[in-house]
Image 1: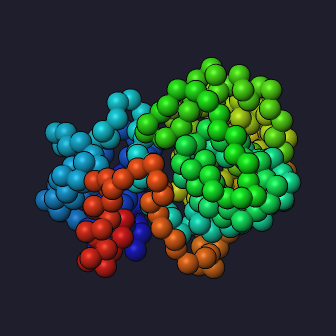
Image 2 (image 1 turned 45 degrees about the horizontal axis):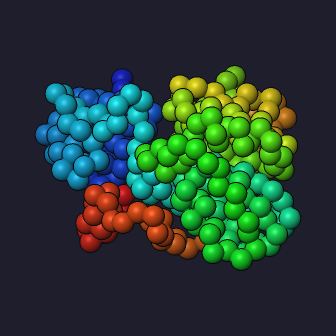
Length: 302
């Protein structure tokens, strides 16, 4: 049940794991959260919130600070790929299936290093004569043994937080590349500012990736619609389509459609049965995995 509070919509009657999932989602778009803010949002006591934050800190997912918690990374908030892969996973799978229907055999497409792009890569594994250009190591790894797909992994400096390559070498490669369709994830979207992300290095790379594409297609779930991020990487006039889930806010969907953008709504309830969330080979078990495994025993899943 959701009502309103001074610190955003109030969400009551959540399990501990559900509350911790919401806390991690909040930390995708802000550097820190306060105990008081979370107590009001979840309609629970400050003692309960402190216990949730302590558990997240014990698992190495957040850093406890006086009066709340913050992300482990310096600067802008950025959760590890492993955690983000599990957030809104049913919606991301549905989005991936709908986006895959927009890809034809013989296309040259771009996938960024987002978790939405990872799920799309998994959906495309059976395609033929497909060229995939990506700066995401885990996206390339997911397609490495797909016989009908050629993967062009863009070189550059490694960013371990997103398991991606960035920098001048990657950008220079893209300036000489022609791509039919680019499928790009976001940290925020705005009719005024376009598609946005947080990290300046990633944003520079995404600008080059989008510039190399005939069509730019945003792939993101409903939680990104009301967010604003630090930097825009694609202006709204360059966005061809958006693929999102059925919980996307109707007014914002219509605002994009009024600009001539094709907004495709994917129904998560009709998506394929869940597959493994963990990337297959480049990472071993993490503290995040242990929290997920522990929650699964109790019938919950982060």
